[in-house]
Image (cartoon, rainbow, N blue to C red):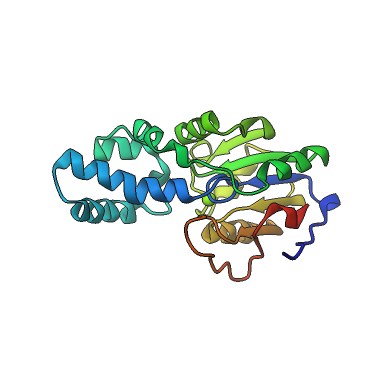
Length: 219
Ligand SMILES: [Mg+2]
């Protein structure tokens, strides 16, 4: 695995996405694409195939918006207790390789470390309950706190009103290419993608963005 050169002296703030970046995206994919349809089919006494189609149509309608990431929205729309359902498959919540080592490395370098996630605050709390992650961040900011999803234009401008950072001296790591593009358009210079966000699926083509296979590449 090749080293990815980062000029750490030039970096003050490190913004990190959670799902697919620090945590294995397998949990989320499994939850939304398999577990939810299963429970939805049971609730409505329909086939799994029908449940999947109904849910997919619902998901597609809100993809990339704050609603898509909002647990309360799905709870209301689908009339299902999403948090309880997530707990049912929580054994699949897992760290990606060498994440803790990387977070400890950032602590040693005395960088400001900010979790920047589209995940709903209830999902963040749930995951922090299973994985000891919270203590590594100076601050946790969700898209719901900002009022826009990370892929939406205006997100970073809004973030600037909440968090003091210099876009030329920030590093942002995220597995979502739309999100990286929005950050790039705003002027974040140091951007990294993730090679394989879901351990159970293939590698993704990250195009112009350098992708991390393992955090040891940037340590
Ligand atoms: Mg992500």
